[in-house]
Length: 475
Ligand code: ZN
Image (cartoon, rainbow, N blue to C red; front, top):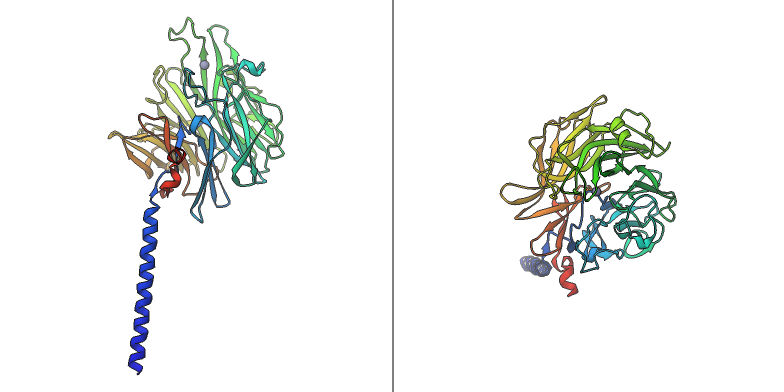
């Protein structure tokens, strides 16, 4: 009898196990039908993300929020919950004035890619869509016109990316939007106030982006005396330590279309590397030696007070900067030969470190060609996040680490590798979760669309294929 009870128990356990196994099998089946892919959306459009419009993502309370230029150059926002592993979106956050005219000579403008900020009340802000405005928008008091309208969209509810409203409270002449939020919640929107021949400005908001102060110039455009050209600038702005905002920038000599100095006319010629700091508490701008600067900064004063390195012959592109805990900056800039209309193709990142008394140039022969962002942990520990095209036609997004202040770099984590792929890369996500540090778009031949990836230390964050296929769904 006891024996039989025992057998009965064993049989029960067996059935139970079989039951479990069959449930397990069913789950596997379900998972199979929900096949995952390593991109989160396929409707990235044109250059989709870049270093300059930033941050393109923010990590906040367990969730990474990302934005990018989607179909018809409209801004799209998606989010990923690191605890539940749930994706939301992408949702369209606004409508760009650009990307709608099929007859326009430059089909995709790409200047109005979105930048993102989450204010202290949890509302998500996106600035997008601008490239200087047009004469129909009226006179631009701080520069010239080109196209589009810089717009400011805000989520209707805190931390909810599903619905948005566009506010009329920033200058529509803006382009290359860059957001910085200070520890006290003050919001700064930096941008160029028009096309090439315009001042760079910021607008400040102390009420979570409900209102912004009028634009304040910090880099001055002006006509040159002896050359048929104007002074123009490309800064990259980021939060430093405490109340500081830090800026790395290069100089664009904006030649007239027909000019005596260069038969090519207007070309994307950029030179030199500069650095300065804005103390937002005192309102004083300073150079690396703590000397105050008269604003808006002119070319003459920039050369005299803020030079990291003069680069008169080679061309420059896209600086980035970070500071160590003592406030000493490290700056990266793409540098390469005069290559006419081609942009970053033959340029290479150069790394410079301020050691308290002078700028040291790294001998970074180990680094691949590629564009990216910098993260400084200490004066010695620095990482670069780069997209690069390897010699065997493999596109790669990886981290390059230095433990000697940039004297040498070694390849660390590889986030993504693809045969025959080229990537466009964002700046580092603000306050990033280790699993979600950067956003990239994968260029594919024969289409303007890009697959969008959210990359971190464990590679791309995967998504159910049906959810990531936005384009297919719409057709
Ligand atoms: Zn120009």
